[in-house]
Amino acid sequence: MAIAFAMSSLGNGCDVLRQRCLRYHRRESDPVATRYAPLLLTTPISYRMARRRFFAGDMSMALDLVDKSIAARPDFWESYQLRALIFQQYAV
Image (tube, rainbow, N blue to C red; front, side, top):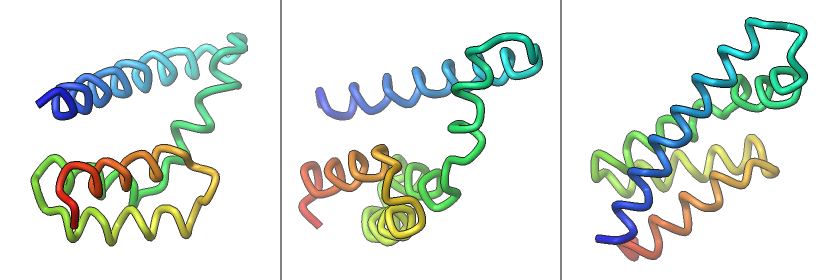
């Protein structure tokens, strides 16, 4: 239960951060936008889909998609974190 709560709060925090960064991105003079906006705009699509599948309860599809995300961007640490949660919570 604590893991599910942590994941839901992590998802909400990421959404809030994404909205703030995109708002800052519109103001080009802000150095925060130039630092964080490219990261948010280059999130692998397979990671986003894996996250949706994870919250929908489809662990096998989420695992396949997160593996694609890791293959596409090995330096994107969120993919490794999601894969660890899948293995820890559901032992696929």
